Length: 284
Length: 284
Image (cartoon, rainbow over all chains, first blue to last red; front, side):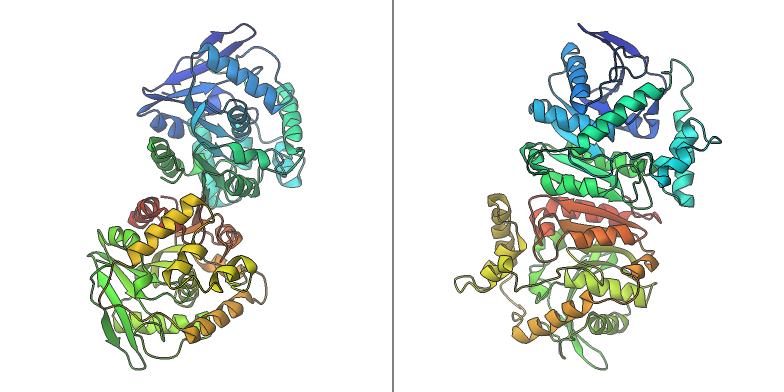
């Protein structure tokens, strides 16, 4: 379970990666958001997903207890995820990529098309996407620069919409994150943030025809976004749905970047139904 | 069943409306697309939806065997649907509004907020939407003006995407529509089309703040669209999802206006799960 799965360390030729795994069945690799560690996965999402499959949570290089330097590109992060998968003998799996993790998933499937069976991309953007994690925007900076907000309280503000219902869901979310009290990762510091922000800026760049690379991704994909996401606006999910040849788009109302945590019951039901399908088509 | 439910006639003070009803349970009113009659409902959608609820198919004024003149406004069509519901003693129901029918559903819920419990809006647009049913566009006109295409063959071309997989699904769709051989409506003629096209033009107009009217619709809504809809582009569904306060958006890949018919198994599963929910929130 998310609450008590022991943190394991996997030694590869270059780095040692921290991870947790729980549940039994086909593997689901979970790739985490900006500055997120193993402790940022919501048990209300990862526990029910682990019923019937094996959930694998992973700290990329330089995050949590994984060694190495945080790469300043998505491609660099994908290389670490490949090294982790290869050493774990994970030749194929499903993936849940949230935010930054969804970009890494896209990069990985483009580099090694056989690696993922089905993909869930939540609150993320394609290469060449727009307005990706501009924390300097007033709508985000006002919370990030508020000295009265610390730790998970910031997440409640920036992952959820500015409505009572969404903020209440955000409160419940951070309470769930705090339930694990032992064997926790250290929170990410400013160096992690700086390198990951550099990776977002690089990911906004593109050459040639915009979004053309998405057309080669044949995997069934489920694209999910909160309709009022201030960190990675929903337009990026529209681009994904319009250019991935085999993607279902699902958006949630009254929610922001953390829509999967706000509507965890619905998200888990939809994600599990999507992953359970053996159709070559994404609709489920 | 869609195939053999007898056409019934309901006499009201002004008009006589043709309808069919089948299944048992909470009523689901189905509002039809441009020029569509009772015979344009796909049994692969309406039959499984009738398992556990009562499906009511309805010909608006001047369509099929309903008397009267086809109104040239959505509001006029909503008035006829109200007259039908009132005479049938249907004080509240769920609604499935497809294309033109989705506009009528929006108009009805705004005029009488208590009338609908949950709303499914497929391939439709809000008032003030864009590029709504411009049949003169070359991408549509080439099929509509092709003398070799008649009757349902035109639907296969304009309701489905120009890929082999979508066109194959379109072929299966028109074969299903042809299964009913008795007690059929007459196809709509040019006068029906002209009045309904006038209604689309009027629906594209708006005064005041664009989409502001959507914010008053509190009903849980499921908005569905084919990602390559050439008749009512998916941007209109984005507007719905962004401005309706309580709407889930679901888009289907590799499909056009008839996405619900192409992915009928998925659509029915999603629609039934949405309708079965008693949550005040749209996510299901």
